[in-house]
Image (cartoon, rainbow, N blue to C red; front, side, top):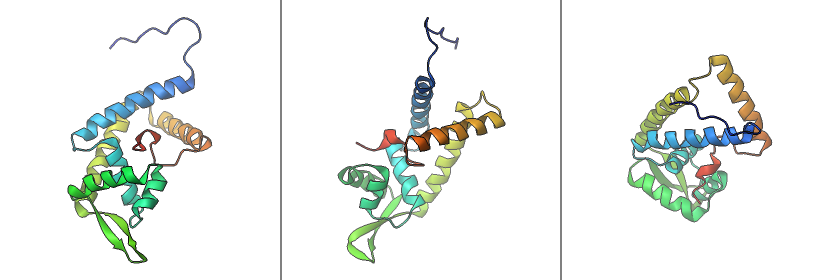
Length: 158
């Protein structure tokens, strides 16, 4: 595909380029995981539960920055597929602790493989040192902006 010429005037700023590449990357990732029957929010939720097994639905909702009522439907969809399960919280029987099942763990491995292939495709123009530099810079920006590590703000399920 030929490169599109830049409009006259100032070149696009870093924030514009981050948004353009980020939106493109998010859309391509959504296409990749659609083949697994998942949406980006479901994938993010599955990863969050695997990262902190045993948290209550309320705690996971707070971590992800999503309304608890919206999270229930997403958990239900993953539970219906046998990917996560709710267990009674021994410390508070009113709460359910969330856990990834063996089937969910296997799917997470597949997601990780797709994620690595996705990263390789998106960053194909960069060598290993450039990728490391880009990642380090993006981590600095994300931290300064107060983003929660590992949580995509576009998938907060609202």
